[in-house]
Image 1 (cartoon, chains in turn yellow, blue):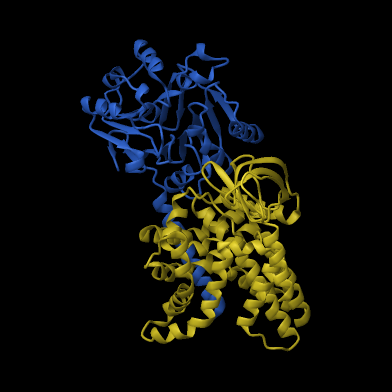
Image 2 (image 1 turned 120 degrees about the vertical axis):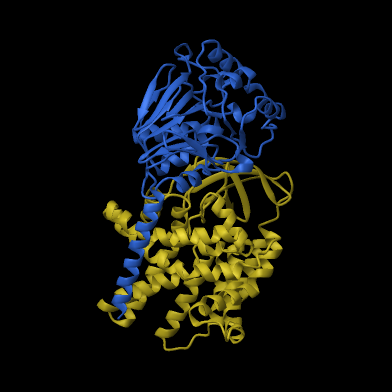
Length: 345
Length: 281
């Protein structure tokens, strides 16, 4: 806790800039830049930098940027230097994403790339707006659920070859590699930390309480990168997880007469919305009352898209034509997803 | 038990993909789509396995249009035409060229020194896309789709000044059976008058109104000679006042059956069976 307070203190100190201050930052871009019609945006040290769309900056690249501070914002941002990151894992991420893009049309390819790798599509697209309107954006940005899937998948593979202890360690490594590949998005990092805590606790034969693990991961994340406190994905991920833990059982009691096969998705959505809805309303000024319904209708398709999409992507890197065939199987699911979101927006 | 569940699921998905494939592959009809691609121009012509994209709008929005009208497994555009190198016509082509396989590119010799255009040129060069230069008199045929190039004329070759980019636009007549469309890029009054004077403007069914309905890009001569039944203005949110009110009034006086504006009407789809044609939306 003490470390945390000191870190936040240092963070606040470091943010003292006045209007007209020229700043030059050289740093690694630690998240995938958002793309707009004419520009791209990324965050360095708590400042948003808007740059022309080309040359394209990717997650992991090193950039040198300049700009003038005005009212806590950076204006006249300029790209001075761009050093592409040649990391093998990031190359792997790029290859899979471009394989999706050349195998499936829009918006289906963005949907698959978003669900699996947290890839952010162009925000000018119709689909992006529809996701915002229906409150389903969280599905398309990589979410904590991905980590659970990756962990479960790896666990089932490793357990057939290794002892429990060794598998757990390997899964831990695998999960963090995935967190890296998917761009260290806040929800994924949160989920990875929570998962790691749970796994370590289990190895040492201790019970872990999830709500404690949640708060511990908040602390760890903010110590590592205080700027996360301004990240909407970070805030939403924590409120959603916390309200899932607190409200799911209570919501369950209200839904006595709902058939079982839609109840699971409905109750999770409703429970998460209790915490998330007010935040969405304050930030975007709009909230779709039908959002829980839309979520219930589409959520079942997400794990299937995830499985088929990652399988197709991996196979496609070796045998492109076979990978494509596998990806085509995800088309009915993504088509359903896009149609539902389209109808309700 | 579990394995059977997976097998059933797979079967279901295979059937669903095939059903969707059947519906998205519509080889009986020709389609001409003026895409709602924002402030810019993007027109897609397709028949069976042949797809032709004329300009790509300013940004990636054009991908939505391609995605909704092309069969989902088809990743190849047989021909892309860039009428002239202005951002609102080539911007989206960067995204298209990154994702799709392009067999042929048809453009004028005009270039643009902006960084964005260099990005496009680099992709075209890097992928080794076959590039053809448009010139008056060039006729092309792709399957049952015929293209007659009217502009630029041969004299325009060589360096074209920036202010004259619009008049170097590729202007073409696209024919399918009895259906004829005049696609004009951003050609301006001088260019239109010259085409009219040389007797090159044919009577057509469909007119893409030049330059997003800007004031200086339409003449009564063009409307009289081409006498279209349908006119489309490709336009998005903009600060230029497109489409201009005088242009809309002029279109009204020439009694054009239907005038569509992409920002209001979204994608405008014309279908044709060869013998007849109709507006789907």
